[in-house]
Structures are given as C-alpha cells and as structure tokens.
Amino acid sequence: MSALLSVSGLQKSFGAVVVADATSFDVASGEAVGILGPNGAGKTSLFNLITGALKPSGGRITFDGADITASSAAARCKMGIARSFQIPQPFGGMTVFENALVGATQGAGLSGHEAEQYAMDVLDQTGLLARANTRAGTLTLLERKRLELTRALAAKPKLLLLDEIAGGLTEAECQSLIATIKDIHAGGTTIIWIEHVVHALMAVVERLIVIDFGKKIAEGAPKPIMESAEVKEIYLGVDPDV
Amino acid sequence: MSGPTVSRSTRASRVAMIIGFVGLIVLIAAPWWAGRADLRLMGEIYLYLSLACLWNLMAGYAGLVSVGQQAYVGFGGYMLFALSIFGGLNPVVAILLGGVLAAIISVPVAALMFRLKGAYFAIGTWVMAEVFRLSFAQIQPLGGGSGTSLPVAIVKELGAKKAAREATSYWLALGAAVAVLLAVYLLLRSRRGLALTAIRDSEVAASGLGIDIWRTKLEVYVVTSAFTAIIGGLIFLQKLRISPDAAFSVNDWTAFVIFIVVIGGIGTLEGPIIGTLLFFALREVLADFGTIYLMVLGAVAIVVMLKAPKGVWGLIRERFDLELFPLSYRVRTKDD
Ligand SMILES: Nc1ncnc2c1ncn2[C@@H]1O[C@H](COP(=O)(O)OP(=O)(O)OP(=O)(O)O)[C@@H](O)[C@H]1O
Ligand SMILES: [Mg+2]
Image (cartoon, rainbow over all chains, first blue to last red; front, side, top):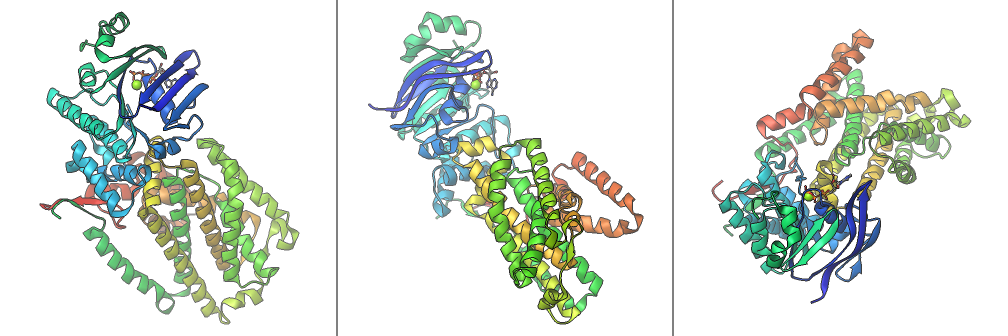
C-alpha cells in the first residue's frame, strides 16, 4: 500500500522543550495507527505539525503524494486532513448542528441541502443529533469532545486525527465510541489516534507509535509494543490501564 | 421523508420581519410627518446604525478590533468634496465613487495592518487614521487644516428647495442603513457568513476546518471600509462642511460606535440596532448636561462590560432564545 501520510525528519522545539526530534513515520491509506506517550511527550504538537497549526523548523510532510510542509492549515483540511482538538475548540456561539455544518461546507465543500443532510448524518453517527439545536458553548466537556469528532468527520477527511477523545467515558460510552470509530475506519477513513485509554486504542488500531520527549522510541504491532520494556518503563505507575 | 428537517426562520423572526417592513414604510414617509429637527436626528441615527453594523461585522465577527475606521469616514467625506468640487460629479455619484476608492486604498492598508496582532493592530489602525488626517490637512485646495464648505451649486443638485434637499438627504441616510443591514444580513446568512461566524468563535478550529482566515478577514476589511467611506460621504453631505479634525475624529466615528456595539451586543446582528437606540436615547436625555454626558456613557459601558459582556441583546437572547434575523439553523424532528 502507498503511504497516505509521510513524515520525515520532523523537527520542532519550544525553547529547550523538544516536541519533535527527527520524527519519521509513514501511514498507509486505510490504516489505523495509535500514538502513545507520556504527558508532554509531544503528541498533540505532532498533530499541530501535521495539520499546519505549527510550522516545523526542519523536515518534510507529504500527504496524498504532495509536499504539504509549507501549506496552510486550511489548505491541508481541503486536501483531506481533519483533526479533533484535545482541548475542545467549539464554535461556542453556534449550535451543534451549525458546528457540523461548518465542517461540511468549508471542509468537505458541500453546499445547500446536501451539506445540511450530511451534517445531520454525521450528528446521527456520533450520537449528537438530539443536541443539534443546543448552543455549543453550553455543552459538557464530554459532549464537546464528541463535537470535536463530529466536526472533523463532517469535513469528510481522508485522514482523521483524533486527540484523546475517550477519557472520562463510562465503560458503555467507551464501547459505543469504539464502535463508532471502527465504523469510520471501515468506511475507508485513515485514522491516527492519540489516546491514553489504552484498551480503547488497542481495540481499533493496527499499529502503535510510541513517542517520548519528541522522539519516536518504538513502532510496530500493538501487542509486542505494549509488552516491550520501553513502554512498560514509561507507563509504569502512570496509567492504570497497563 | 420522515427524517429531521432543517429550517431557519422562527416565529419571532417572521414577526420581526413584518414589523420591520411596516416600520420601514412609516420611516420612508417621515418627511411628510416629522419636523425638520426630527428628520435630521433620524438621519444621524441611520448613519450611526450603519457605522455600528459595519464595525460589528469587522470587529465582532472577523476579530479585527480597529479603532481607526474614522480613516474611512473622513476619506469618504473628503472624496465627496473633492470629486464634486473638482471632478464636477453629482454628490451621490461622488460618494459612491469614494466607496470604490476606499476599497482600493484599504488593500495596502490591510496588508500593512494585518501584520500586527491584538492591541498592536488597534494602535496601528489609529496611527493610520492619524496619517490620513495629517495628509488631508496638507491639501490646500480642500482648505488645509481649517477645512471647507460644500458650494451652494453642488448642494442644490440634491434639490432646489431646502425642504426637498433635507428629504433627499434623509432618504439617502435611510437607504444606506437599509442597504448596510441587508448586505450584512445576507453575508452572514450565506456560506461565507457561516465561515465568518466560525472565525468569530474560534480561529484555530476554523482554519483547521478549511477556512482561509487571512483572506476572509481581508475581504471583510475591504468591504466594511468601502461601506464606511460611503457612510462618511453621507455624514458630510448632511453637515455640508468638512475639516480634518471633524472628518477623522476618533471620538465621533469610532469611540461612540464601539460604545454602541458593545452595549448592544458585539458579534450579533441585532446588537448594533439596540445599541444605536440606547445611545441616542441616552444622548437626548443627557444633552443638557455637557461633559456629564460623556461620563455617563463611560459608566454605562463599564457596567455593561462587567455585568453583561454580550451586551443588552446577549441578555435578551439568553433569556428568551430570541432571534430577529433568521440566521440560525434549527433542526426539527417530526415530534417537535
Ligand atoms: N505553543 C506552545 N508553546 C510553548 N510550549 C508548548 C506549546 N505547545 C506545547 N508546548 C510544550 O510542548 C510540550 C509537548 O506538548 P504536547 O501538548 O505536544 O504534549 P502531549 O504529548 O500532547 O501531552 P498530553 O498527553 O498531556 O496531551 C509540553 O511541554 C508543552 O508544554
Ligand atoms: Mg496532547
């Protein structure tokens, strides 16, 4: 399979804090990849670099065969990259439906009735349809996270970047989220998922990448990675899931 | 289809539209029922309403908190005088052409100003407006620092008799306010308006969803500047006299406008309308108190900012879930 996303030699630091240290990896079209790493490892920063919210000081990012290292965030979304924000960024004065509609019209380029219908379909899929007319600024944190997923999906991405959307859910809610993400993946969307809730991640992804201090320290099939010494060391006493 | 449907109008918005329409007809007829002083005051209200709507679009939606829009008010005013006195143009044509010229000038100004962020942008726009003021004060044919009056021959192009001129001037102001409100409403209702509203709420999320922030802001800045210049032309058509200090007054054309938008409710279409009415009500009540009037305005602004950061309209909307202009989308399931 050809690589949909290819990151090579990515470099970024904030003063003394290195968030990407010669980071390189490929993600094939149709794959689901998990990203693990301790707090402050640079996972969210990696998403910021991939989506164009941050500019790297070195390295290259290619997507769908094109070099996007210098492209704007908006252009990258139009090419097919959408993300959820770890700290939700809802359009607070707009309704939940309108939030989804922004994704459908601006990201996916739909218009009129088609856009409205698609926004409703996505809301239905993520379980927010009942909240469609609620002002997004009044949602609970869990609902806001769900809205992040919804809005990104509404942009019809080829590559969906999910940043910690499973935290704080009950077991039943978590299972339903896993089912939703499996559905999205089965529909052909490539996924990269940063998640501390390891069992949720393991239920979906086919490959794991482990990051610490901005450096990729392990990569491979989920099971052997989770059992490797490096990961055990990082997560010992950090995450009760492991 | 049995699935949920999407609609945009609400009962309140339909009622508001009917009332608005009837109200508009009554206002169009004002020259026949209102006195001269009232006509003048109403014309001024319409022009302030227009300035407030435009500033709100730029600052409240596009996040461009400029304190220098007096640059375009003054520019539009001066273009009226220059193009009609030296170009021999009809005053209305001169005002419209002034809007086009303002649009052209606003592009390089934006290219410069958009490099500045936040407070620096605000200060930058103010400095730019001062540059405009000082530049126009150098133009001797337009009276330099002391200004000039519109020649009687040009004024008469609006109507031979004084009453006819005043009516024309009134209708121009009313027409401008309706045009500005309608343009802003149609923009906000469109797909681009949805993008603009998204920018209002979160720039980082908006750009992540494919919205070109810089371009959208530039478009808004150019359009609001052009319209602001047209309103400026109309303001000085009412005054018949222009000087650099009056034309580029930060107090008259920006401070009062910000006051209106902030107390009315920034980032909403209804806010500037409520704000304009409150502002003029306060001004009429306090007119006899001199400087106390300004102190009361300041106090009102501070109280509103502390107690109701979304303005009077924000309070009303939160309490009653009201919307006069049907901008929101409402999803209705069958059992609603
Ligand atoms: N814009 C920024 N300016 C300065 N420092 C930053 C910025 N963004 C991130 N950092 C720092 O970079 C480091 C990595 O942050 P990042 O958010 O990428 O971590 P993370 O792996 O996502 O952590 P978490 O698991 O807590 O979400 C942190 O030390 C953070 O404080
Ligand atoms: Mg993070």
